[in-house]
Length: 274
Ligand code: AMP
Ligand code: FE
Ligand code: FE
Ligand code: ZN
Image (cartoon, rainbow, N blue to C red; front, side):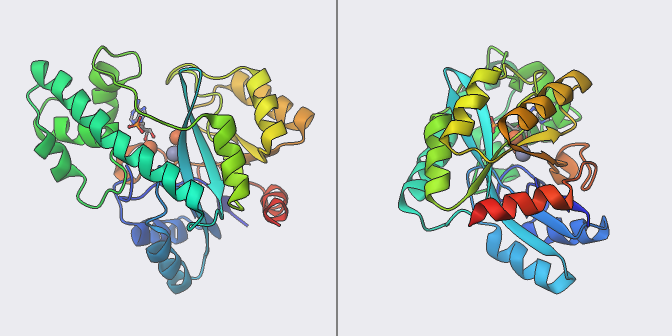
């Protein structure tokens, strides 16, 4: 069984529609793929229909933008009730805040690199969730950069003077809300320290107490030292260690299936659902 529990579509900042992500997953030899768009479940229906068609299992998931004392955190969750009132409200609030934030970043960036809000909208026609990668795409179309990574390095990173934060729920509260909605929360790339600040062990302990079920260990943004640290934390706290690609289509070099979650660990996530 080949299981990849983290992938994005055009519903957020991936470059392929949900059905194509699922088709690509089948082509990559996966048996199970999770669709985990940022702050939206809008791709589930299309992905699920595609999964039935190509004969693989679709895990309906989400990657919730969160915050903890100024540190940006991504919380994956599998199988949450998409109609849960609190969850629906929080996601809508985050998506709205993302629009205002992206507009503010475009205003700042536009002073030095000509680009407009319409350029960004043109890059994200299907996106329920607008993010920095869409600004990157607009800058690429304008000829300022060749690749998303280059745009991030010079103008879009967390350390950039053009960076503007957006509202996101406090992570401990988000874990509680996701569990309340029947979801299985898994901390996404908790050791991706090249992107920005990461949280110390004590915060992961706090999240485990709040109902966190798993943490991503095998992820391309984790150094060998971070993988070792995180598998130690998972063993110590009884968290399920996962491995995932964080596929974004052509938007990132990450390939479907480049990291996998073992069938045993996938079964442990399923068990936590009940
Ligand atoms: P946002 O959600 O708007 O804050 O943007 C964060 C998203 O940007 C992440 O989910 C990644 O998809 C993408 N991202 C972050 N760092 C980079 C990078 N260095 N190169 C390309 N994409 C990145
Ligand atoms: Fe992303
Ligand atoms: Fe993420
Ligand atoms: Zn992701």
